[in-house]
Length: 261
View: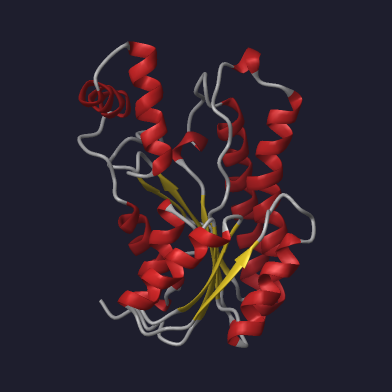
């Protein structure tokens, strides 16, 4: 499907690996110039090289810790300086600590909200004037942990549900300003983070890797693990005019794991 994104400019946070890198690659293959943002400059440079290998687009890399209050302004400036415009913001950065609730500290919770929730907030605030001018859009990558409570995911679940509410609120503002704001909830996706989940399951259940994967799939009620490029494809669609009537939508890309309304 031709998405009509050629020549657009996007900023993708958490773009040094996993879902963020896959989103950047998918957008680039649609002809989008991409600014890659994360803390690890070396990894960002590797992703930029891969983008150039698969697509004839421009890239920019910007190393930043999105916990820092000024990080949003700096990242958006890097994108606009590189491309002269900003049409698409993909908020994706932010891992949260997973552990027994009674071992988690106030600092753990503050750190989880600082990176993911406040990172999304400050990136949105910084990008909004440019997106309003371009009639652009935002795609927030959240997670199905927002849909139900989980004993070991008290930080991540709380952060994610806050981002879903934030998505709806910004979509409401976006109706007036001409900015579309939508969200994707990925399920189990084949990333480094999922690899750590497998290892934790192997330790906790004293089982093999294959048994750990089977257990995780069974607990989600799904038959396979998703691929990062599947999240990339949905992001590209949401960023295109093909999704022009989607506003404040929250799309679960999880193989059917989410059964609630």
